[in-house]
Image (cartoon, rainbow, N blue to C red):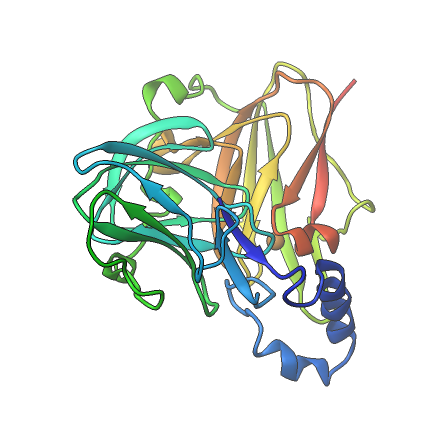
Length: 302
Ligand SMILES: [Cu+2]
């Protein structure tokens, strides 16, 4: 479980939100902003990044035996941080994302946005290895240890060289057969434009902040398609409640998910089946962006 942490060791999340809004209102605040995030790095520098609730100086140790085949279920529970995750001296074989199986892909590192989940299988060597979550565009790291044998633990400052490789991103994945939606032309196609700015601090979907929103709509039983465009220089993990979707990447065979990370200026189309009538949230999984308005709804037509 990956997290970015400030409460008790830095300003509270509410104080951070107040500062983002205040800095967005003042030109002088922009000086401070340049030290914060920027580009696709999130909006906030955190004093600490955690794995399983533990600081890097006091990491959790996951125990196993050499040769064990272990499933790592990696969850990004942070508010504002995209992580690249790697296990020192090992490759990760990604088998699932957001609970749905994919055709297995092996990578040195995996990129995971807020709200996303990746499962990776690894066959463990003999020793003590660092499991590291490196925050994208920020200083510091989240850290745990995997111990299968004796020897010296990696130093706190050690950074696995696996993080030097380009991380696996969602575009490299294909849904397993059992996770595919039926191939079907969409009954409706809707655009979801993600935009906003640091000054003023406001984040929008289709040009509006919640709850001054024009909801997306769908009829029960329809096949829906969303064309999601990130019009900003910040990344946004878009999450839909009550539904899952299949990415149109990989020739329409992209992974089945409920949260998809849009890089700066990125685009992705997703298909979903309207089988769960109600009024559902659609929102950026950056907690500060959601709080600043980056939410809308998916409403079923009567
Ligand atoms: Cu966002």
